[in-house]
Image (cartoon, rainbow, N blue to C red; front, side, top):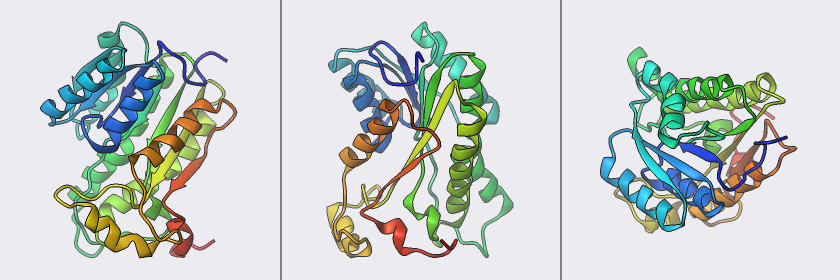
Length: 251
């Protein structure tokens, strides 16, 4: 059915596309011939750079600002993206997230709510809006390999990504057959802002493959899911096997 796999000329909305994995995914979609709406929150200059990189690949791109911490802004973003592109959105990539340190016995309700809004509820709101277009298409969510273990240093973030994992499976059922919904769960891929590759090298021993990956590994997994028209509700862990070492949730 039309829209279930990637095709040149389709419109993709990539949230958090100004930097890091969001930018890499925006460029990958552009290389497939898609036109890309580059969403950003506060990184305007970086978003313009992503737009330039996408246009250099020979396709259209538009920057679009929205604060996903505002539920009404999240709900309106798909319609705004379609208006900017002059065509409905075919592909939604939920890459934007927040990642502040927090601890289970200390974080406030407001901290948890902020993580849930940006990391889980906004992707749900965007997916609903994509479905409301009444067309075929697909959603790709970015998770975290630690959803199967426990990130005790970022507890509110961890809970929100666990929620997005559940939403990925639920939406795959609710939105079928018109929309496919899948996810990629990266592990040791990019160092935190301000750190370099030495940070990754020091943690390489924490996964079975004893090394770290790169943005290209995530992009290849994402493209596989987005190009596979008979796959939905699936999560690919791009983490060197790290997710198999945790037992917080059993299994």
